[in-house]
Amino acid sequence: MFFMMPTTASVQPLGFPDPSLFVLYADVLRYIQYRLKLLGHGQVKAFCKQYLFPYTTVVNLKNSTLKRKEHLLLQRILAALSFETTASRNPLSIGEEDRYLFLFPGREELGKFKEQLAYIDSLAKAPPH
Image (cartoon, rainbow, N blue to C red; front, side, top):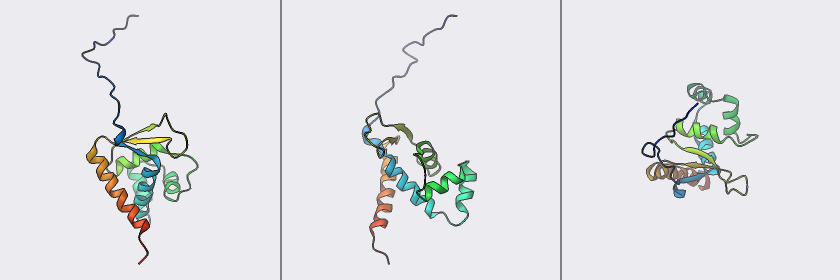
């Protein structure tokens, strides 16, 4: 059997991702947990059904009781929340907190995410009313 190699004109080079477009797992987790907590009673089940997410795992994610890192689920949930990303292992990680990274497609999308995350973080630091 003979296989033809593609010509160089049709092969696109695999570029190096822009490191400034990566977000750590912990940041994505914090963002998603907040967004899930915004859902009212019964809305988590409807959200899971609509996007075909595993309900029990999403509830555990919401309640910070996951047994392991769920980077692919987080990536899918981010997409459902209008943030397309690429989830990948960090080959240089030295601990659990930076084991997974999420690559945003551009500065605009990353800026929106960081702006919303900063708002979430400011709420957590604000004194109660």
